[in-house]
Image (cartoon, rainbow, N blue to C red; front, side, top):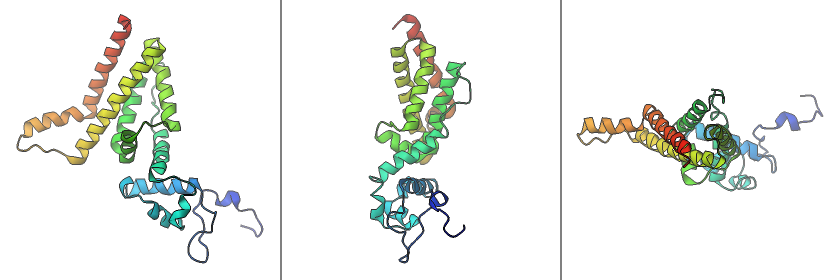
Length: 220
């Protein structure tokens, strides 16, 4: 870069450069840089091993510097999970086939929870109202209203599909993490394990949607 050239745009998003002590100069760190470091940690060492101290070391700042921009580790996880969710939740199928759209949207969230332990951690601790989660909810409500032709029914349907997806994803992730504990009853263990597979999720979701449509037709 030529002498005297502005550096703001050039350095934006990069880790702050260390000063004479080896740490970044005061005021050079941003929330975006901290979130980026947290995402790297989540994707490499896992959210359980991510610490504020470790993020500070990665960014070359004192740990207390991070608290000027973030509340705590959970605050960071919320934003990291939101970024990851935004990249994967949208179905590829057209909304012109609303049922197929809902099925794919639900399955996308299930896979996200199973493949991203940080996401499952966040979703099981509290209601998620991050930008991507809210955008997903609003899109699902819109599509479900096409199926039910009723706003209240669409909300009830969303609640049913969403809680089913969260519960199934949690069980599937737990089974994947801990494996079989058959205690010598291999056949029964295999049968129970099959209750938490993607195929079984699809079957259960079909039953759920069939029930919702039947209730709508009966006017319940």
